[in-house]
Image (cartoon, rainbow, N blue to C red; front, top):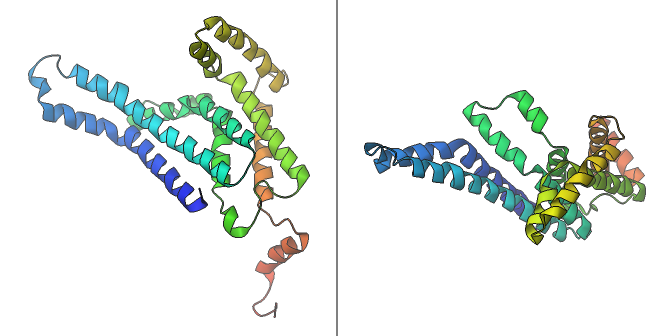
Length: 249
């Protein structure tokens, strides 16, 4: 999937998300009004429950599914390592509850402190990476993650840390295996291991500061990989804005 189509599908997913979080309540209200259920006491309840309890979350999940699928397709198109698909999937699963939290913002039920408390680090990793692979590498001839091996290693290390941090933080990674295999003891065992892994990743500081430091390194690494890998070309690009017209002739 080339960059233009990837960005187009991402915009479609964002539009679907905004529709179901901001406008779908009005659709529900219009449906209730036009159905005439208000004439019979209690008959509007099933309609409201179906639309707000099933259809609205399904629309949000549809937007998320589109984002995940097109991101994996873009990774495949760029011939990146398959491990990036696994890392992105982990980030996505860990971030899934957060958009549903944002959906309450349109109704005025969401406070800024609630957003900050519920913001998973995996969501930040996911957003930055999705924006990064939207770069038109196929047109510029640049290599994803850059050509410098040390820089690629730093980016990969940061991404793996972000994935491990997501595994240690999201309860879904404990419940999904147990439900899939029908063994709730497995879920309990995984849930018991998560706090220890989390403490190890934050270096026992009790706060997620180190995770945000690694995220900043990840962002800086991705930004640096977009720079020209040839030092002469980089020097020419940096000097170009300061050169007078005709001075390069």
